[in-house]
Image 1 (cartoon, one colour):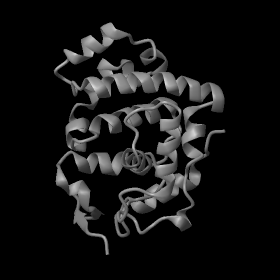
Image 2 (cartoon, helix red, strand yellow):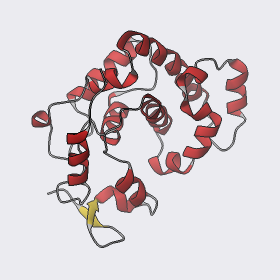
Image 3 (cartoon, helix red, strand yellow):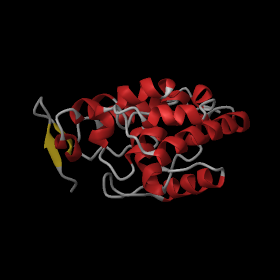
Image 4 (tube, one colour):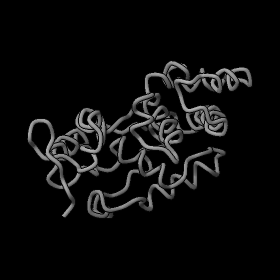
Length: 202
């Protein structure tokens, strides 16, 4: 059985939520709930890319700084970033100053524009990879799933960068494409309810 941890209210949560004090709020209010907003989806893809090789705690602590530095993750604005913006961002000590990742998310903003032109919205594209719950392993037991591998491969084919299968699966978990709240976690039922009410784009 998947391990659980007691939250501040004494009720069980996913075990990882107890690994940092700020994780409980993120776990309870955001993680695993379905998102259909293109800007939020793009932001999460960017932040997951920046997390590669780092901890989510590091990224979460800097999230507001990232938003300020990257035009609120408005992909239409980010697609206009040029070399001077890359140099500006490399001087910004409040974010992760990794040239490859900075250039990757700017590139991915341009690729998002292409996806929106083709599919109508980023949400329509992303949710087309939603797996059948019957095909999923027990919650919190997988590091990747076939759907995340398929999405990763297609994004790479489209020219996206820093979107490997592990990144894609973490994105799917966080954005509610799978309900990966552990069995017994008090937020699993909330995630299921929100998913039942959710209307997919496209």
